[in-house]
Structures are given as C-alpha cells and as structure tokens.
Image (cartoon, rainbow, N blue to C red):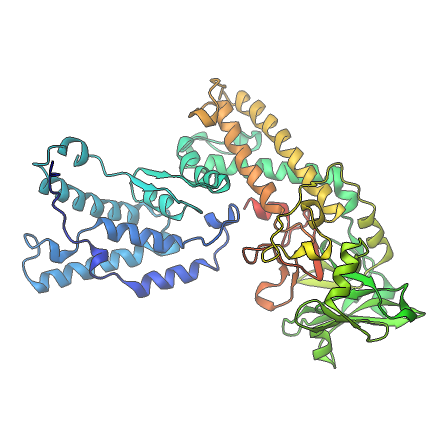
Length: 532
C-alpha cells in the first residue's frame, strides 16, 4: 500500500540562517553562569541554548523562497529574509531568553508556517490528527542529554518529549522541562516570602525558585551549626605580617577560608631523607593576577621543610611554576635532596597506602580580593580531626584510560574525598531530607495540601511540590561533589581564579596538589553557588 504523499516546503535552515549572530550568542553563553541551565548539574557536551533555539526555529519556519504566493519576487524574498534574520538575532540574545514579547513573535512565525503546512496537506487521510492547525507538532528528543533542545522547543511553544538512557540526564530534563510548568504562577510556601510579597506577584516558576533558594539557605546555615567547627576562620597574626606588609590591615582579624591547598606526599627515595614525606607539587603558584601575584616558597630546615607564602613576583618564576615536578606525568624531585622521584616509585607508595598530604597554603576572603596565607598547625589539625559517619566503598571502574587514580592507590569513590569533605557531603545529603520535611509543613500551612499523588505520578499537590523542591536541593548536593573532592585543583589564572572542579574532562585525572574548598564560604566551591 502506497503511503499518502506529504507536501512540504523548504525550511529556513535549508537555505540560509544568520550564523554570525548565532555563533556570537552561543560563544557568549560560555561566560554566563547565573541562571543558566548548565549550572543545574554537570552534563557532557551541553549545546548552547542560543544555537538550540535558533535551529528549532529555522527548522519550523518556511524559507521565503518556498512561499511564492506571498513573496512573488526575489526582492520580496530578500526583504523577508532580512526580517526573519533580524528576529533570529533578537531571539538568540541571552537577555531575550525569557522576553515574552520576542518569544511570542517567534511563536507566531512558527504557527504561521505550521498553518501553511496544514493547508497544504488538508487532503491527507490523517489530516485531522497529523495536520491540526490549532496544535503544533510535538518535539521528540530520544537522546536529550543536557536538555537544551527540548527546553528550547518548549520555550518556542512546542510540546516537548525528552528521554535518555542515563538516569542523571533524565532527571536533568525533568527538572528543566517537566517540573517548572507544573507549578508556574504559584507563590512560594516558605514563611519569609509569604510575609513579604503579594502572592499574585509571582510569575512563571519564580515561586518554586524562591523556595529552592530559601530552603537551600536553610540547609547551608544548619550545616554551619553542625560542621562549622571543621571550617573555622583563620586569624592573621602579627608574626604573619612581619615579613609581608600587605597583611598589616588584617592583623588580629579572622578571615573566612575559601580553600585549603594540599600537596600529596611520599617518603623521599633518598635513604638520607627516607623518613621525610616530601611534596609532589605540580606548581607553587597561587595567583598570576597582575599586581596580586602570590606563590608558595618551601623552606628546607632542621632536617625537614615548611611552606611559606610570598606576595609579588618570584625571582625564580620557572621554579615556582613547576613546583617539584620534573617533567610530564608523575615525575618529581625530592625537595630535600633533588633526587628524582619516578612515577613507578610514586605508584608503589600509593598502592601500599603510603601516600599522604600536607597543607601547603590557605586562601581566605579579603576586603577586595583573596588573601594568601601560609599553613598553620591548627588549620591542619582541624582538617585531620574530621571523622565521617559514612564513606562510599564502591570500587572505581578498572579503566586506566579514564580513571587515573587507581594506579596510585585511590581505588574507591571514598578515596576521592578527604575526611572533612565526606563529612560535608554526608551532612548536606541528610539535610535534603530534613528540608523536604520543612517544605511539607510550610506547604500545608500555606494551604497547599497533599493530594496523595507524588511527582513521579504526575501530582501537583503539596507532596509533589515537596518532591520538586527536594529534587533541586538534591541537585545542589550532588553537584557539590564535583567541587568537594581531593581531585580538585586551585586555578591560579586571573580569569578563573578559584577552586576547579573534578570533571574538566570526561575522566577522573590524578592531581598532585588539590584545593579543599569551604562549602560555607561565599566564594567558589560553596554550597549556595550550586543552587544559584
């Protein structure tokens, strides 16, 4: 049986699109963090929202050359191209992501082309189902990943369906395209916002977002009560400032720590210093920002060594840049004797459980920037005192190409975190459930009762709302693991100064010095950043 032919017109994407405007908007997105869906949770190869929005629009809109009944001449077609290109250029601009005026113009163009397609196929035997001019076709993405395409399809007025084999991707898509519309226009349930603002003033998913921020802030404050003793402020003493005049304004003050920087250690292979655990530091540089340079300077003394921190440029910039590293890979030199330390020796020490870590520097919040301080015995002792109640002992995959840590004795997921980081992750994970209980109680007080239908079954009552807020709080806790790991490094370059994250690439590398971020600070790596 021969299928009935479908009449189709050439689409804009098949002829010409404003690539320069789309590329510029897509490139700009990389520097936008606040409010961008990519900050919800880590996912690979995310597509720029601007590109996704433009591609879907251009796939749906007829090219002017395919509408000769309206655009009779090449001049008329050229004029229409310019009009559509101008609209696309507006559409892809980040500031217009939620601009309903611009979005409505785009939706109108899509509907105009769709009605034209419906008229062209009015004689199709299934026209009532397939070519309904009042219902746009659905958008289906079976490999949705980070969700850029279904999100933008929904934004442009299409009914979006997304799926993926990976449950993390599925949850990301639910959080972006399924949950927010369920509670659009609803006010928050937290008591603080209910006291301050008229319940009619909340648009779209603003109420839900406000609750996520409120209960996330409660989690952070509650965590500080429970584990704040492990993240104490560092006091700047007169002794610290005696050799560094730039610290004088901070003498006697206690500064919030942004990160503790640690160097992994192994015992020296030189028999003379075989009892000294020497640092495997791939760099001693702390900041390369102009006029704000800082670096670690190790001092060998009394049969051992200690770390000091210096401000300004070093006279031996190459040595600071390289740390104790000799060449690419796990090749270092002994700080005490300059004896080479081979990769095989380091692997053997790691597998034998003899690889340690030593505090190398402290980064704190200053008046107008970061303050770099030498380590103190007190700070190191506090970190070592942490005792997590639970430690994940699941083995890491035996995949040396993508999991580099196994060769050095870090063989389980628990090995990728310091004891203090495990305490923090356990605490925030527990607080997600406690926050859910608060949401449930506050929703009931706000008159939003539980209809007994959970979110997973399509519910929109109080219980489903609790599930929704809990989902986003869970994302924040999960995302934090990417920044609270002993694989994270300290980024010293001016544009990205701060705690790096584990998955800079689709693998878990081995790092030789690591940055232990403070989840309770207001700088990079803190918990609230994961929710913002």
